[in-house]
Length: 360
Image 1 (cartoon, rainbow, N blue to C red):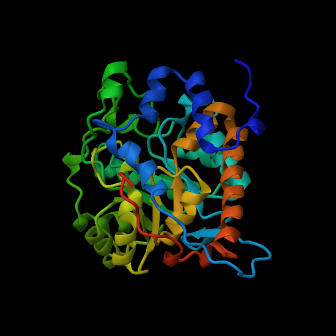
Image 2 (spheres, rainbow, N blue to C red):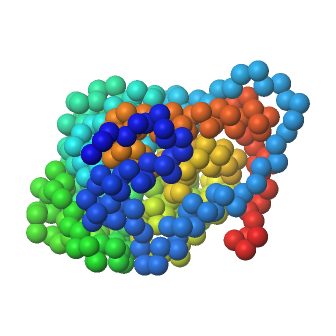
Image 3 (cartoon, rainbow, N blue to C red):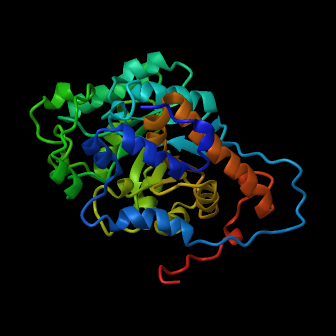
C-alpha cells in the first residue's frame, strides 16, 4: 500500500479512512466501536459541537501561549494521549511510536495496562517520553500491585486507575467479527491466554473495588493517583475529598454503558463539584482544537485524545501521530486570538454559551 502523504491531511477526522484501509477489519472495529446502539459514541463527538463561542474583541493578543500542565509538569499543549489498548494492531511499532511522537511534541502519554508492549519496553524505547500509567485490576490485587510497582520503577510519574469497568459493555461489532484480543504482555501472566475474547479484562467486579480500597492502592506507590471514569458530580466530590490528585471525566470512549451522558455534557457539573481541589481532565469525542478550548472553558485543565491518534498511528506511524498533534496545536493557536485570549489560562466559562439541544 502506498504511503500516505501526511501533508495532505488537515483535520484529525481525515486519518480514519487511511487507518481503516491499513488495519485488519476486526481490529479496526474493535477500536472504532462502542457498545449497544453506539448512541453515546456519536453523542461524545456531537456534544462538543453543540456549544457556541461568545468571543471577546479588541483584546491585546500579540502572541499566544498554548502550553498546559499535567500534575504540575509543563506540557507543550493542554493535551495528552489517552490510554489505548494494543497499538501494534495499528502499526508494528505500536506504543513505542506513540510514545516517541508524544515526546517529540512535548505532551504526556498515558500507557495502557493492555498495551502491546511491556511497561519496561516502552519506557526504555522512548526514554524522553512523559509516561503516565493507566491501571486495570488484573488477576488479583497482588499482581495489580506489581504493575504499579513496575510502572513506578520504569519512570512513569502517575497512576491512572480506571474505575468504570466492572464489566465490559455489549459490543455487537466484536461479536459479529469474532474479534479476540491479541496477547497483552502486561496482562497474560495474571490471566493466562484462555480467558475469553478480552483476556480476562471483561469482568473485574470479582475484586470488588470500592471507594474504601483507594487508600490501599495509594499505599502501593509514591506516585499521584488519578481516577478515570468519573461522570457523576458526587463522584467528583468524593474523589476530591479523598485527596485524589486528579480525575478524568470519561465514559470510556462510549465502550461500556451506552446512553451514558456525553463527557462534554458531564464536565461542567463535575468540575464545579470538585471546586479546584484536584485536577480535572476530560476525554471522549475531541476532534478539534475548538473542542479543546470548550473543554477548558467548562472547567477541565487538560484533555485526553484517543482514537484520532490511533488512526494517525495506523496511517503514518510516529510521523502520523506527530502530524495529528501538530494539527491540534495549529487549531488551538488560531482559536485563542479569535476568542480574545492570549493563553489557555484566559479561557473562561463566559466565552461559551450553554449547550444547544440536539434538535436545534
